[in-house]
Image (cartoon, rainbow over all chains, first blue to last red; front, side):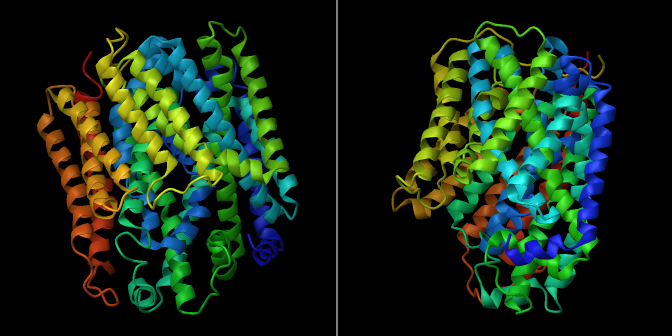
Length: 495
Length: 133
């Protein structure tokens, strides 16, 4: 955020008031949820008592981080239509997730008491080793994700509340920690509903504003194309390979995002899954309107000379809001950004704590006795660790942040998404693919980060890790004898 | 049978994608890579839908039709954008406010499935995802 934008936000009492109001609402939900969290299943999967709408809103809020409101519009401003390839597979992915995983995970919760994503892998392959390895991969990814999200939260809260980034990190971490530790998944889901609603409303309002301010009298194409013909081309300013690679990574990779999949365990009535893709698609589509609208509008405004060119692409949303939105709407958007980050953080904390207290001990042949207490303690430790990293070393955050999405995708898509529906999948195939995803992600991302080499346009470590783990999974499963474990799980309409 | 088709399609798609990324490190990757990506994405998506959805005997026709639509929209949408470069980039023909090639990709690949797939999922839910007791 530029100092000008930061100053403009800090001096707006409605922005601060909206943010404070939002925190008060979160605290209220946490207080309510804490009184209802009594068992380990309450803590990790809200006791399996959640309705479809809250579950879909929670999945939406968890899957969209602050990137949807800050990084995304900046990416559109920079590369044009090419950035939209992140969103293009949205409906395909939502329906594929439902077909492949929703009913099966929900059924595993009933039949085997599964409540973590590695649980599903362990049950499917009858392999604590596969479960533990998946738990390790998730834990590494979660720590990286948490550190980057805490830093982003610190930047937003620092700007809005007029405090330093470090103070912002700790305010955000302590608020999220308070409701995550006390109310667990129940607090997480209902704060997600609030957070998802704030995000959707803010996105719709800003999109309408962006369309009216950005299109002008001539429309986007007539304004932008003469100045920058590639911007509105079918692949934007990306190469076709790079754009299609985004479609692959965000389309197929989304099938392995545990913070979204984990929500299926929480659903009370599996028959309600019928409408999951519909509800999720509508919620996601409305919430990503800002992503596209602000990026296009700012580009058009800059071309027409009504806004100075941005110093940094990430300033697209703050700069647009500062110039064109009433301060209460700016407040709503920044509450939405904080909401998006906090809902993702809460989901990651739950996954990380479950890996520490449940999945990894199982692989080591141990069982934690009081999982609720240790779950709370793990949440506390992981959160404080990530916040300490975020507040002390931005370089470390940048490094850890590269292991997130790719690790989730490459370790879970083959073994979980494909494996739950393919009887030919074997234990050896699952372990080999999870190991491959973990190794390729860590090595390739580290080498690229250290600039040992640069990838050609369109090639990313995430894409390579995902393709490698898919191929390894298929080949090793073909070459090894079957597991004899659970090959397919069906949901039941009534329990 | 559908499962064998599904996993074969997933395997074929993965191989196409691996080739596309491999070729990106060579000069041939600039032209062949995107086409392999399109083929890989279509095969992988089709395979995943078959694996996930086609387990019961009923409603297969609707699912095969949906599958065909998904494959066609991916191949035709991206293929159209790849195969027909813009002749007049400074003043392209517009469709619904966007250059035609961009409109085909955004509305065809992005918006059309938004309307179709969740509806197909809901209509086939009883037999495909929630089998009778």
